[in-house]
Every structure is written in structure tokens, then in C-alpha cells.
Image (tube, rainbow, N blue to C red):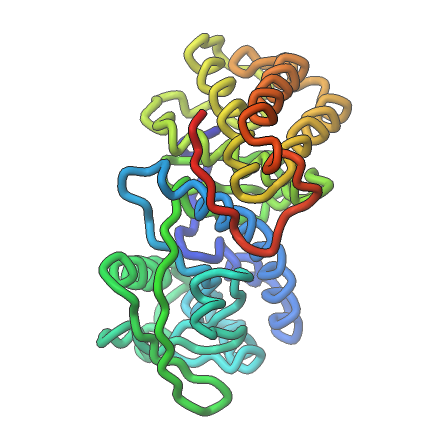
Length: 334
């Protein structure tokens, strides 16, 4: 867990524009779609866990399941290429749709362009034509959509293949935070109370969705349990050396324990947590030098105990062989 590791893009798609800052224009479409597919993987896992644990928050957030992007996220030099590759103009393009999500149920499709949320236009030709690279416009779009979904189902004005459509989307309550992907070689994941960020290196470290679900559920647990109020900015999922703190170790133990029922409720097999930690222990022995985090052996023991308790409480849910296609509603009482 880390309160703030670096500057983050708070939209549904994390920093995809930055990925293209030095890309050749001809490769723009491929680069964005490739990164979008990776983001869709982590977003899908996060969406399912958050939906299944919605009752864990006093005020759940209404989720959409839309991965959106707009031209102002990209450097001016590649905007024309991105516009052509995605038929994207002044609105917000749908780069991905979480399967089974509110957006999927509403009928949104990849490469749709959202032009209005309710009676509010989200087009801005002036911003697209001028100015530098910024994520502020997408952050505003995400906030506008979230606010609309929090009150009632919302009508979207969508352009698809030259035709205008009106689609109605009803938000999905969720708890744990928005999940973002950061294009980074750092092997890390962190949370700040409202977001969970997973690096591409950490995503590749996970051998399966069940293992990645543990990483995401661990950080969601920090958010749900209110750990972001801590002033310890040196915390990470894998930390090398830090200042010893029994309070920090307690938070990490609690997050590991709570991650097990969270990921299980989302439809993921909890033993993925053990295989992930065992692999990490072999590849990252130096992380056991951390004074802030429990050793890998201790973490494996904590997770194993949590799985044993869960198997006694809900054996049918525990023995899921693989993730289901839609979120599995469940009551988290742990």
C-alpha cells in the first residue's frame, strides 16, 4: 500500500496518452489498443471485486465499466493519428467495456464516442485543437458521469459509425476504489483511499487473474479499512527497506487477511494469493529485508489461515475453480 507513489492520471484509463508521447504516429492505434487491453484486464478484476463488496462502503460509488479516452490526453503531435485510428473527434472514445458491467448492459461498444451525459455536452473542440497534453478533461468527464449515475440511470448521446444513438446506463454500486494501470517497470501496487494503482510490471508478475486479483484486493482492502489516513508514504506492496513500524505491519496483515474474502466474493480462487506470494518469495527474497512489511513466510501463513476460515464459512464459494463471467454478489463479513 502506498498513499502517493507518483503523479497519477485519475481517469478510467491511466496515462495511456503518456504511452504515446514518443510513439510513431503510425503505431498510435496499436499502442493504445495494446495498453487498453492490459487496462481492461485489471479494470475487469477490480470491477468484479468492487461490485461484490459494495455493501462494505457506507456510500458505494456508482461504477460504469467504461474505459474512456479523449484527444487531449495525447501529445499534439499524435492526435491526428489517434483521431483517425479511433474515429475520435471532440467527445470521449470508448476504448474498452468491462464484460458484464453497467456499460456492457447498456449496449456500449468499443470505439463508440460519447458526446453527452444526460443534458450535459462533453464535447470541447477548443480543448482538442489547442493546448498541451492533459488529463484534466477526462477527470472532469469521469466526475460528471459518476455524479449522474449516483442519482439515477443516465442517458448517453453516442456516435457510432456516423449514427447518433441514445443509450441508458444504470450505474453499478461498488466499493474499494477505481483500479488504474500505470505503465511502469517498478514492481509495485498502491492505493490512496479512492484509487488502486497497479504497475504493468506487477501485472506481468501475476501468472493468472486469480493472482492479480489478490494484488488488487489487497490494495482495495487498504482503502476499505481506511489505511490511507496513515502518514506513512514509504509503504508499497513490496518494500525493500523502511523504518520499522508495528502499526504498518498490522495494516499489511489486515489487508492480506481481508483480501481473501474480497477476491473470493468477486469470483476469484483465493489460493491464487498463496501462489503469488510463493513466486514473489522465490524471485524477490530481498523484500524480506523490509522492516515495514511482514516476511513472505508470515504473509503466506496469514493468507492460508484466512482461506481456511473462509472455507469453513462459505465452502461452495471457496472451491470456485476459476473466475465466473459476471460478479458474484456476496456479503463480506470477516
